[in-house]
Length: 311
Image (cartoon, rainbow, N blue to C red; front, side, top):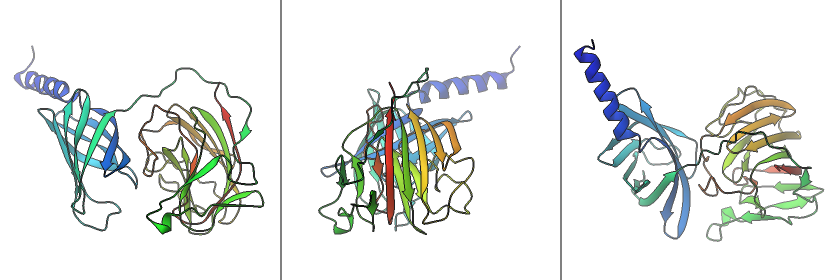
């Protein structure tokens, strides 16, 4: 015979499950700021019997933990401290759940209020192993044909600075990011890179998931250091070479499952990427996307860039 306490706990658990099940999960978010669309991401999870917690990715930076997500009568809210903002105020997020979408506002640390819409993120999990075609070059070593810089006319510091010299695509200083004009679904990517001491870049898979590039020699593995999927997945080890030496990534992306080889060693093996990382081109995870290189965090060089597509 059940005790009164066990019955009450069962009722409480069932009530939470029924009320929270519509909000739990991963959400691909699009923020509207003037005439711009900015990607973002949210995950909401159970935390015991009574509460919800989660993670949030803004337009930049890494995934941030949310200690408590409030949800009642189809209204959601949470607050998290600033990350890279200069201000000290929390980011306050509110939304209504209606027809399977989250629609609400974000009150940013600087006081600006922006609107956003969230839809449930796709699972992107394949049940069969794909086969891949022959690798093909996506950089010809001569010019930027097949690539386009993502610059900002209103911000000179974000202007295109990419050049090609001696078979190398390089960003000699901070400026614009650069992406392929072609988009891809599942693939195996090979890219060689050279990062100066103290610099920072990244390879964005489908333009949404950043494989981090840093001067990682002698550094412990981390989600924000060389070879990590920024803010989400930590490498098993750090086989980095010294700054100024050529290094290589061999990355396989199938759905949202990634394998990373750094300098010939497997550092991430078939790990799920939960969602988009900061700096993504958009939050449309179900769509194909480009290969994008980060050029706004310091000098970086790339060469020998090939891709093999899943059949």
